[in-house]
Length: 462
Image (tube, rainbow, N blue to C red; front, side, top):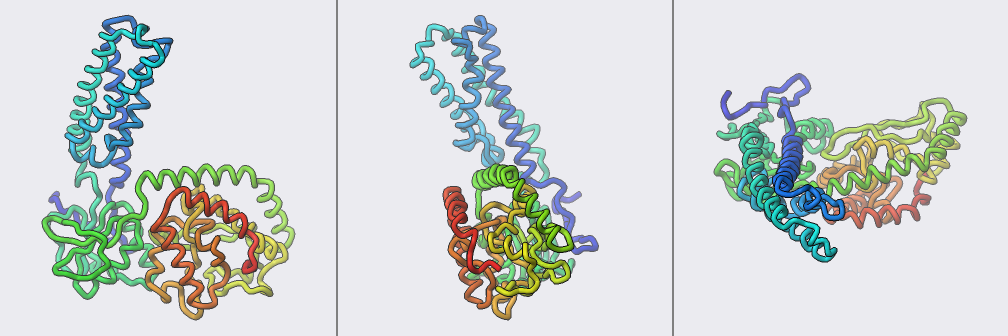
């Protein structure tokens, strides 16, 4: 097989064959491997030290020094990039940063021993030999790990996809998708196409688009709506809202989008989502049960109402709500906004919509991973601002989908809720959503959650 792996051959649904294993998953496994290598190296180093003296001389007051050093080493390693992509890509950096983390951890423990007056209980010879051996084993372990596990990864550690549209494929690309051959167009007015593109780019870290000049702007704006590093290959100077300059196999590109959150930020946000959603489901279980019974007694039909919405990277998902309308009058496309005297709304439905209780089943969407506690609210595909679909008002609408949608968000606590009778109603929400995405921080999420309490009951909910 040649180096260029063609994925332009598409199955019946128009989607190409994705890479066999997501490169982000591969890097995650390699990060775990680096951690295990360091743990084994430090434990082996201290085992050599224990061969010189009884083990108690490396365990003052019963505290085994190697187990004390290990967590501190891993913390420093995570902080200084010893467990990062650059550590996987550059062996010299991997060894240098790992050794620096170990030396800092050992120094901290040695200082602790001094202040605890436990120095006489530690064998200096055994401790010194353990440190030297650990340093050697860390360097050797990372070298062997790089040779055996990192270097053999096909196509490198970064998943790159080249999308060609109207131009021939560039030499050297490992994954190529021919948009024209698959009948793929950069149409911002086609949600189904956006969902297909989401499935295409999802496994990749970097997407480069090579297209004719007339379609560069459409591709550039389209790729901004996905949480990947996206670039447009240039033949000449073109103002596409670039945020950086890159290189692709010896040719210049401009970066038009980067994922809005780092791995660390996504981890913090997801952890908060899981903790808060799990706690909320447990605490609110009696209320959820009572509401379900009330809905069943009030009108015929299912307790829950599921509607297709677009989530992160424009991927469709089923949002869950308590059913608040009569089954025969339910609006699955969201073409008609509720009004104060809406005859579709049931008696129980009017109360749960007024108090926002109908939104509580979305906690299960959060646990599933489709949504977050805080983020831009997901809209129904048929929602209108005035007489236009949301994305027809402004094509920047798609940019709000670079993060998971939320149960609440910055727009909601500012009062931008309810029906969108005018285009300005959508524009205000979009401005708040993009402001939230550009300035994300965990403290703001906590603040938004706290402020949501005062707007749970609002005059525009009916």
